[in-house]
Image 1: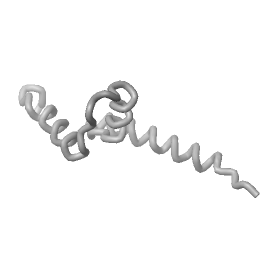
Image 2 (image 1 turned 180 degrees about the vertical axis):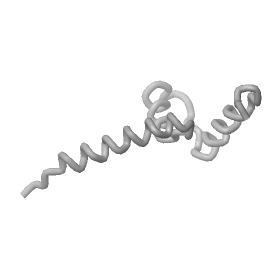
Image 3 (image 1 turned 180 degrees about the horizontal axis):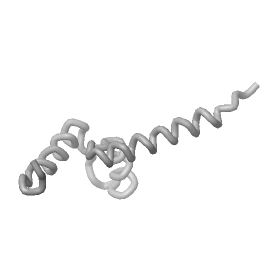
Length: 70
């Protein structure tokens, strides 16, 4: 007998998409999205580790003090 995994799989996919949108809205770095992008569009380039990626994102975000309101 096979299990019907349709709704749970669809729910997980929807939750992942909602999570990605919320992360973009609040400005949180999306490492898994970065890895997928690099593998799809730049397979010849080395992928940063998660720590390197987060450091690069934070540096880029806070390196221009005039871009913040506070």
